[in-house]
Image (tube, rainbow, N blue to C red; front, side, top):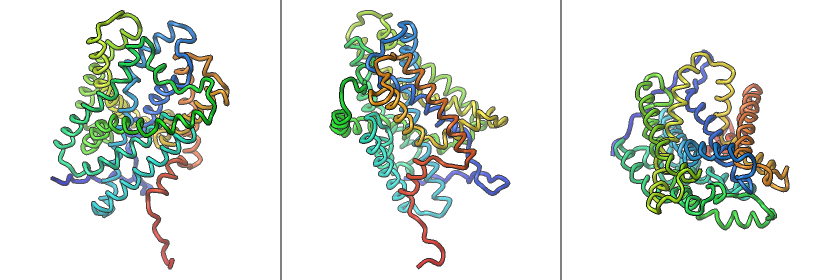
Length: 395
């Protein structure tokens, strides 16, 4: 096993503070929009409510660009961040056993926050899955590049098979994937919903860990080459990969989209099975391509550094806080003990709520930046995961 050379230290600005790479933060900001759009429709009782044409358009958009795309993008960025954390500790002189303990402790605490998220709010948590995946895969940070690629490829097999169920069931039942995965309260009370969440959580967590693992590993591989931190240096490769992966992803999702929209009526069972496998498989690459597209956009954004770029970067720097806040907003907007809109909005309406909540999050994150405040969830995770250093002169 070879030990990769840590990435060079980032440049320092005039103040001496380390300059953050723009693209990873922008990608996390865009990722939050994808996650919001993927999750909001799960809170409604009937996705077919509202204008049929708008719902059909939203349904095709979800299958082509959102369903089984948002989570791989999040996982890719998580794996990318693991390498950044590893390099940062190495530059500070930490040896491998100490760094490994730190990253595993961080992963366990992330899983604990995810569990609290499930207990207090909703069953669609993804933080615990990433935390456990990080604990299990941290040893790969010192693996060869070829080992990373082979491991990611092998993990794609069980991940695709498990994720395919989220496509196959709706197609065989003739309903939306959001109907099958709905977490709408309906006529259930808070206690009953809590019991359901706790009962389903272990199985759902195991499936989620397997499903995110390939993208985490691919994120580790990409981080060694600093594709997101130095997009201008890798512009040619990023353009080719983003275009090719997006094209493959859209083509891979078209059969399932045609079946669900009723354009392909009465497809044979073999075609349904194939579409159910191809959509999530190509969705992995579509999700990663979204990060590549943001990296390319960051090249121009870095030159102007306009107010929108600054706000989106602030959003990405507070991604965990905003992700948890999304659950609070959706619970308040949709559930009966909030505004109770779960029976009034369909797929298009829920998608609009997701977009509006994301815009509000951009504004809130920028206000926090102006006030010099970090995200409370990020502060909490850091305090839990990183041991406090004793003050000078203390006993």
